[in-house]
Length: 420
Image (cartoon, rainbow, N blue to C red; front, side):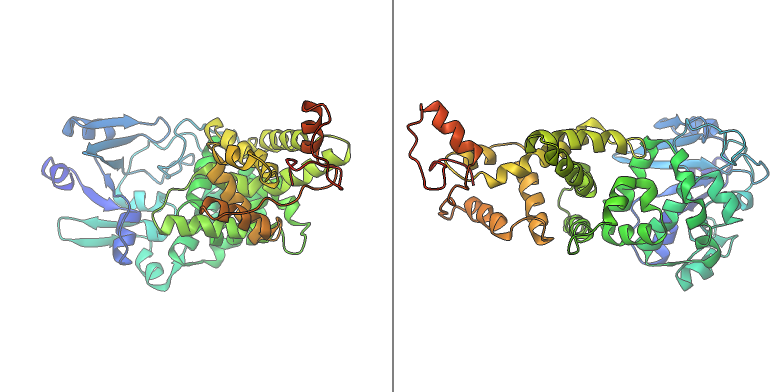
């Protein structure tokens, strides 16, 4: 691609994270190209090209299963520009707060470098002489392990508040420290994230928590006061800990996700959001139970209340929110270990995710370890005896009604088939 653009008379550079990762000795996940060719000119050169976006016009060129993103050099002369190709292309200017409208004013490679976010992401590899061009002192920052925002941090964060999340993400991912001027405004400007569309925030959450460094990202977000902007109910719940829970629970859940990513095992946003929202759900359900609601109904109502509130900040598509609520709703059923109930529960399509959730709860001290061990042994095929019924269990009463009161009575008032 680079040579085709060069042979057609255009400047073309490999740029961004691909160059940064190669210089750090890491394997790049993707490659981006910057050129002085307009998107329409790129489209004419490549039949397998598709133009996307309005606010930030880009060319996507497909090679097999790979898509190479090609961006035209942006100008640094316009006040209403932002250079972030990951943004929602339909976002519009909000009228006076420094947010952006369009970034389709083209310029030179030097101007393009000034419009990028961090210095280590503004390095250009030139195929003409196999050199790396550095217009913003990115190479010294790369050598020193410093993440520095290009330009005035206040202005750049107001242009695009998501840059604060990107700063945290790149610092954690690369093991870099934030430059003091890059770090200083974050605590003061974090509230600007409330104006970012929830759908875009969902994508940022996935990048923060599902790429193998989620536990560190969680700690960094809390340190900078940004987690409260993303999950306000969870942050509020974290202020009221019970012997280390829920902070320990969320950390263990994120550590588990990180481990699965590193082992190349599948992960799902449903489980991630279940872990992040469980404590506010649990607290609300407990309040509803105290008001006289049945535990299952209390948990259901609490789940929907928390989800409804959460999507105002971070969108949660139904394909993830539905299984998340199912993970919640299955938790009480793990205590029902009599009769055929365990087998029926294991046949539920969300059983494995709900079981993993139970194990994490036990590890955090929020559920009985004996309960998690019992279910582990059952799945392993080891014979396990059901525990005795608890006094006055609802399952025992229902069984007696079905049998006309002929159930085998126990001293505790339940029946042999009643739930634990």
